[in-house]
Image (cartoon, rainbow, N blue to C red; front, side, top):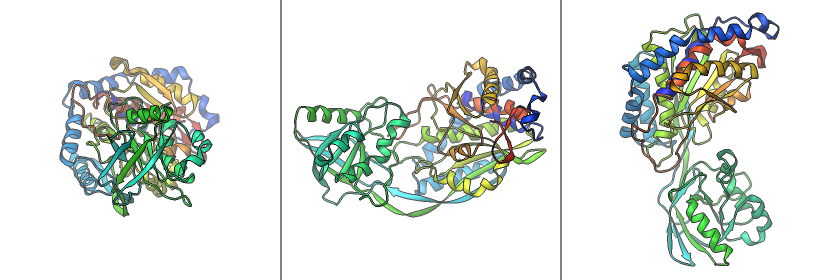
Length: 475
């Protein structure tokens, strides 16, 4: 986690230290790129101080230990659960006790779904108990379950071609894994497409690039006017096995039982804390991760790690005695796994002040060693971010990728605010616990956010281009 912290805090602090003047397109030429590069290079000592504090100093392993304490104490934190609200209250108290400013809770209405008992058993061509995880918001089956023949397809297009065969059957999707963003559509839309052709349930191959007989859960969405059918994920291995059986002409029959239930929306909160800007307190640099998780595992990687990376970024700034000119705002989102419910309600509440948002950042990719940052903004701004990342050469994480986005910050990015997203490997939506300290890189992740934030805070106004709302964004 140290490297992530470095980047995060660096971006935040240095963005918020910029002059605060509004610079429009015709003023951009007032500083040459060479001057900007020289200014960035001058912040090397700040980056080193963050690295030393996070990696070798008193903050060493702090964010990992904080994360471990929460997930061991509270466990998984699904939307609408008492454990999520307990975690929110614990974090609210932690932020207050650390002495961060303007610590408060912003109310949010969130979905409440519980999976209940669930099972799937292949009855033909042989008896085989399958590992499954029901998908978020799915309805349950009748108490006796659903017993039906299976239709295996590899794509929505194949399902449409074979629509007459689907009526009364359980559709099994064995879609190949391309990448997460493309393949996840089967998890999100699979039940709706199966219901449209008369299926009684759907089982989706887990959206994963590898498997150790491990089903993955996640959100799915129903559609108005389309019958709701039960839906769950199965393992890659079982999806492939049934595909082979079907290709041989075997008749496959499954009994599916799911006790899933949807309850009325529950009360929850986004958790907010700040280091208030010394000169331009109304201008905001937002850093974030989400506190909720699915109900399997501990929610340590998705997204306990991201939440604590973001908190640690502010902690490092505070420990170093840095007071940014802009306000650094930490938001720990609620109900991200249900489609960014907390983040959407935050956006609706604060979008009137969008011109005051300089940069939005999110960490939601676990606790392993990051490979860099993904950025969305102008090419000029991207070039500057690349220069900033060069300060992290001591920890050998300097890459800047394209397409910075995240469920919780996309509302702002789509409105024109530039965004940064941590790029790392993740294992999520499955029964996974907190990884060992030797494998977790929470401090590394945090110091990446920290260092880049520091530098960009100083550079922001004099290097950005006018975008939406007549406001100058770093993008």
